[in-house]
Amino acid sequence: MNVLGIETSCDETAAAVVADGRHVRSNAIASQIALHRSHGGVVPELAARGHLTAIVPVVEAALTGAGIGRDGVDAVAVTDGPGLAGSLLVGVNAAKGFAYALGKPLLPVNHLEAHLYANWLVDGNRARESDDPPAFPAVCLLVSGGHTELILMTGHGAYRHLGGTLDDAAGEAFDKGARWLGLGYPGGPAIERAARDGDPARFPLPRAWLGGDEEFGFSFSGLKTALRRLTDPYRLPDPPPAPSTGPFPEHRPPLFRPDLPVADLAASYQDAVIDVLATKTVRAAFAQGARTVLLAGGVAANAALRARLGAEMDRHSETGRVPPIPVRWPPPALCTDNAAMVAAAAFFGRDPVGPPAWDLDVHPRHPLGSR
Ligand code: KG4
Ligand code: ZN
Image 1 (cartoon, rainbow, N blue to C red):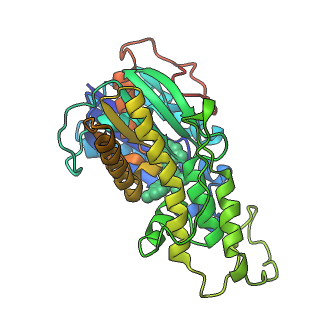
Image 2: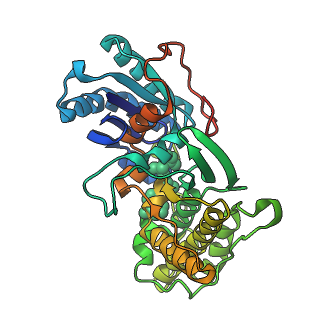
Image 3: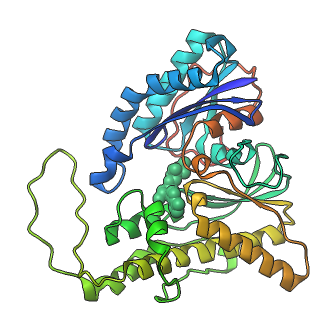
């Protein structure tokens, strides 16, 4: 069964064709990074406009790339939330149009669920021991620009929330840190790059371990303030404000002396985020008797996070004399927003021949598991 997936929840216009929920036949993405870069983050109005111009060519590219023609599509799946309302509307309405024109079912998909299902996609490039589907129960760490959640997945579509962020998402923490240091947008890859030559132990940034009811909860909102304090001695006076060149404010990072230890700051900052993520994920996996640990979301593209998770898993398993639990993650291009994961989630998540959802609306704040 070939599902055409469509994804426009944030700043990537994406369409893909996936066979039987696992085999990526095509995966087309029009990135809006250049559109938002000078603003230091996603501007919702620009994102919606960008989706409008990109959606038809991107869907055409996905169909051409899959080499199946329009008749080969069995269903159209689309992200209906959570995400930016204006962006979601473009994808949902385009998907309705394509599904109606093709005479195929229209399947709504939750964006968070889609991120998890990226782990079911088979992609020849990844370093993975096997292409078997992930075993249940799985403890999933979903870390993106808008979400940080630990989820127990006991079967297809069966989720239990173990904990989440009380404030900023992990990706948001990366984006804010990178903005402050003037490393650019999106922040995660920029911090990861800058951190490569840095010493993660140089600056002790706070870790919010929380406890009690929040044993598996996270908090990252204090990190940016702590980073800011460390950079204060290097700060130069702000230049006079430049005249505005458009309706949306341009981002001007603070100015620092050239001896600002950017690499050590980035490495210490990244370490503060991934330390808590890895430690709590491994603890949750053993506490829940998980057979697999799954990473998902844009931050799962971070190589330091994946390495730390592996190391933490080995340490925990040696100390407790228990076998390590296999950890899996999608290849980087399937961690960040894409439409292949949407098609996969639609295949596993619902009855593909259900009634057409022509009255489908967008759900900007949809939690995981809601339909
Ligand atoms: O999943 P995603 O593409 O979009 C959302 O649904 O939010 O995640 C985007 C987030 C951004 O905050 C970005 O900075 C972060 O994922 N990200 C990374 C990396 N690549 C993307 N964070 C850390 N390291 C990376 N390599
Ligand atoms: Zn996402």
